[in-house]
Length: 214
Length: 214
Image (cartoon, rainbow over all chains, first blue to last red; front, side):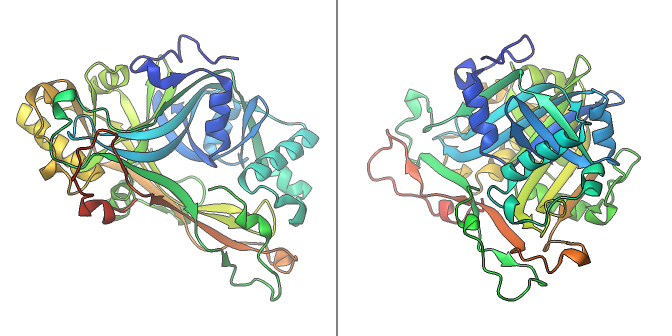
């Protein structure tokens, strides 16, 4: 499966790009937030957004009262972009210095999920993406909570993936310029869990906190 | 100075919002990439983008051949959003679980900088933002590199900042549900520097690598 269309064809540096579905999934499955763009009165808006992946759809949830969600539910064109910054690439020159990254861009229109059983299922998918393994231990979801939540899905059809890995690409004449060159890797990590102020005594930290990937 | 306008007024959860310039600067000064949104044929596009802050402007650089840069240089409306994900907020319910974050949104139109001396200066500002302290040791910038680079500035006038901090906000009736609740902090960190394959022998790791904030 490929996500290439006229709208997702690469302009510059196509060697850094992919339209393979497996590459798209790898980028989005490894993050918890992306940036969702839409158009209001002809002008762009970009908001950070938590999400999940439900098979061939990226799924979002939000308050039924949120303006962006109402707009998206009406089928407004949107662009969802997920980026991992993996490192700073230090070349001998500023011009050739760069960043290592993985980024996925998905274009399309959201569909609102109205069926209550399906909303329930998709909300579970989002919870499992954001907080894997935690759902069975939670206070069960309530019908009024599902009713207050809008659930949208964006088909994974038209997409592109771009990434850069590896060391600096200096011009041959710069290689011996006497400055350190290489990559400073970056990663997101979890700190020590901070219990809620009102946590009941005797409740231990769950194992899943130690198995999650940031 | 405040960034509030009709377009940046808060809809939901205004208590999590700010229009203070100091709050905006704190968010953008602590990151290296943001997500830039613009409109192509009525449809949104969102791309990750490195940047700097030059006083009252966010500044970008890119290839003169890049399509998005040409569009932005023509004054297309844009939205630049910078987000830090600071932690996962684990409530007793999925509904009240959340994320701690800091996010800044800037609306406006870019201006292209054509004056060569000014381009040179702004490119230095971007290098100093991305790789602070490194510029004096680099192979000096060349006129042809400056000529091949488009430099844009986006005025910091119309903006908003939103953030969430602290522990979960469970409903009173959920507080004693027997599940661990609290915050799992997240942060971006640097790994050990990886020297370039073709780095000349005897060039030591510079001190600034150890002082940078991820």
